[in-house]
Amino acid sequence: MPTTHLLYLHGFRSSPQSAKARQMAARVRADHPGVTWWCPQLPPSPREAAALIAQGSADWPAAHMAVVGSSLGGYYATWLAQRRGCRAVVLNPAVDPARDLAAHIGEQTAWHDPAERFLFRPEYVDELRALAPGPLQAPERFLAVIAQGDELLDWREMAARYAGAALRLIEGSDHALSDFEHHIDAVLSFLDLL
Image 1 (spheres, rainbow, N blue to C red):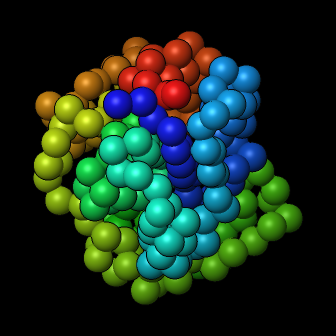
Image 2: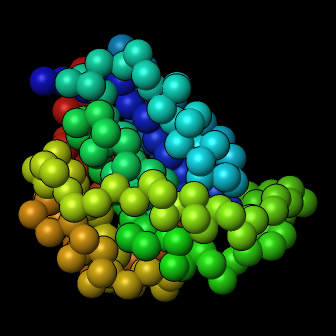
């Protein structure tokens, strides 16, 4: 069934201005103008981010919606896909962000605007734990794009987490998937956009 509604979720310290989000938005606009596209700025609180995501997509038809998430956005995308039973593409997805982000409590700067600051609070680690999506209920609904050259996350842990899903393992590259233009066609093909 074709995807008519597409959500893109950015990663920690990122924004809808990320290169991948902008590339996806441009391709959807150009090639799939009938698709509803939403790429919200996520708040630092995982509980608030989850509420925003759930409310903003609540009236979307589960059989015709999909979500793409990068890094921490991949964790949120997995959480949403498990809840709604929709397709998901995860790009270098965070597997255990409660563990990984515990070291980042305190003031942070936004990646695309270092003048913009936000506080990552200790309670956010527990909020991340509360969103743990559990084992994949339907791995066939997932595509994981994983760079072996990711400098922040262990590609082996990501690949193990998404075992049974469609896996696109990239030799080299980096956490940001700086070569995303070489993988976007595979992402769009998996999403089967209207």
